[in-house]
Image (cartoon, rainbow, N blue to C red; front, side, top):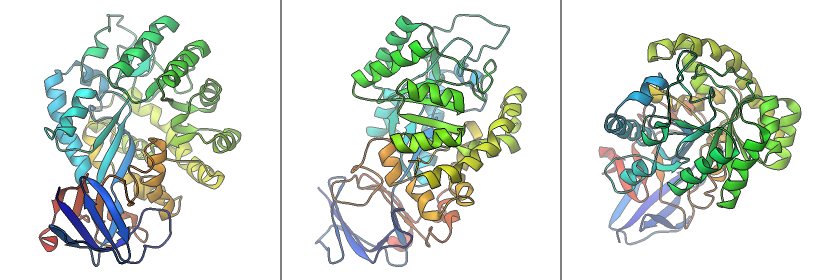
Length: 412
């Protein structure tokens, strides 16, 4: 196995408002072997990180790598082969922005995961839920009011974010099938949404019995359920049913923020998607009725950030972008940076993201035993979060699991 040494590495991982003193990092077999001030090695590969800031590979806790257009109804109709090819390009872009792990919240399957693991696609490590679970007329039911055609094919094509299931027995089967097919957690559309035609935000969709059935099976498989949630009433219902993570959470109340902080429930805000949709949603193919819904959640989501931070809520970094909006993935850094300290924003994509994904000790940190996912930044992102944007323009070095995927001439 190739031994690699990174020397003079000043580390920023969001756990401190200042970079560390220079250290040596030894990498072997795709993992970090040793880190320390006087650490060195007789390595086959040596990279001098002097003048750069070294960070753990970034994690995006909410993506849809199969969303090749913002018109998700159209995306569902596309050939699986075309969606897979486009997804490969989307994932490559993510990795080149420094995201070495992403958590897909609906659509990506075990096949895409294997394509990345085997090297057929160059992309970040994929953590998947398979198809998100939606009821008739809910989020990911894209038929609209004039069609009742059968959508039993939803689980079989790559371009759908979710599948339809109604009633406890049907839901039990759907959850079990997704877990059998390789899902690592369960995603539930437990509120209305922006991108679908029949479900206003605040629409209490699944029954309590249905929600509890999903949670019971997820826990039985040793994992958890997370919910697409906006309004406070829907969030409280989901928490009462045993959900352990909240996606979006834009309309969460002060009292529920306190509850979430106390119970250790994670929240993954995704504010950049509303920012982009409000400005350019129609240009990217989102239907007008969906763009109109953005106003309801955009400003509230930003205002909630500060309150959740002050309450000590565990927050993961999330982008939730679709189609041509994917290049804006890193914009969540600077958007959150208007409301939160830079170290907290960075932490949401490193050590806190690892907690959200339940991968502590594996990702989000530069420590012995963790995957050797490492990026180097030209400058200090604690002083300027914009250094994490620009499609990786400020990142001369990107490594995923010990393999260098980007390296400028200056580091050769």
